[in-house]
Amino acid sequence: MNQSKDEQWIKEFIRFLQVEKNYSVHTVKSYQRDIDDFCHFMKKHECFSLTEVTYLFVRSYLTYLHELAYARNSVSRKISSMRSLFHYLMREEILTTNVFAETYLPKKAGRLPTFLYEEEMLQLFDAFQGEKPLDKRDRALLELLYATGMRVSECSHLEVEDIDFHIGTVFVTGKGRKERYIPIGSFAVDALKEYIDDARVNILKKGNGETKRLFLNYRGGPLSERSIRTILSKRVKEASLHQHVRPHDLRHSFATHLLNNGADLRVVQELLGHENLSTTQIYTHVTKERLRDVYKNHHPRA
Image: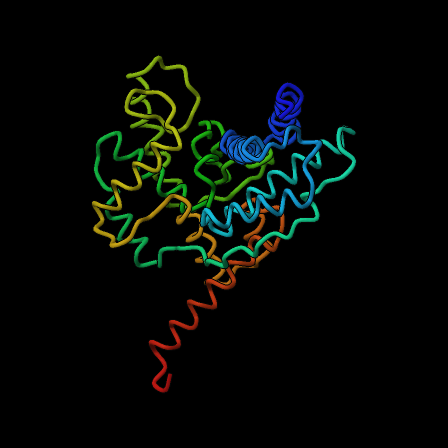
C-alpha cells in the first residue's frame, strides 16, 4: 500500500471531521478504527493504494466482514465510514469514483429503544437519596437527565451558567455544535438549586476551585461521561432494578413518556436535538408497543 500518500489523505480526512464537521472525539475514533480495519484488509490482500480500490474489492471486503460474523449495524457503519472517506477524496479531486457509494448496505436491525416505565423511574429516584454533597450531585444529575433527555456527552460539558433558573431552561450544545434550549421542570430545578447552592460549593473546595463545569467529581474536577455511567450503574443496583440501565435509556424514557402523554412529535424532535424527524419517529413505535401491552393486560377480551 502506498502508505505515505494514503496515510496523509486519511490524516487530512480525520482533520476534516474534527474541524469542519465538528464531530465528537468518540465519533472520530470510530471513523479511524473503521478506516484502519479496511487498510489492514488492503495490506493483507496486496492492494497498495486507496486509488486502486475497485467495486469488486469492496465486495470481497463485505464478504470478509460477514465471514467474521459482524452484526449488520457494524457492517453498515464500517461501509458508511469508508463511503465518507471516498466522498472526501473525490471532493479533493484525488479520486474520480466513489466505489463505496455503489455498495449495498445491509438493512440495520430494527431494535426498539429500551426505556423505563414511569413506575420504574420512581423506583430509581428513590435510590438517589441522601444528604451528603455527592448524594445531592447524583440526585441533580438524574433529575436533569430525565427532565431534558439530553445526551451524557452534553450533560458532562454543561457549565453552571448554562442553567437559567429564572425561566427554567438549560442551554445545551449538541452534536456538530448545534445549540438548543430545553425546559426543565420543578423537580429538576429544586435538585439543581440544592446541588449548586450547597453541595457543589463544598465539592469544589477539594479541587483548584477554577472549573465552571456544572457537575464535579469527588476531587472537585469536571465529572466525565464515564463517571456519569458509573454513578448510574451504582444507583441502579441500589434500586434493585432487575435490568441494566444506561444513561441513554433515560433519554429514551424522556421521549417515550412525553409521547405517551400526548406531546407533539416535532416538539420532541426539537427537545432531543434530532436533525431528522425520522430519528425521532422510532419512539412512536415504542408507544404503540406500550399501547398493545396495556390493551392485552387490561381488556377483558384481549
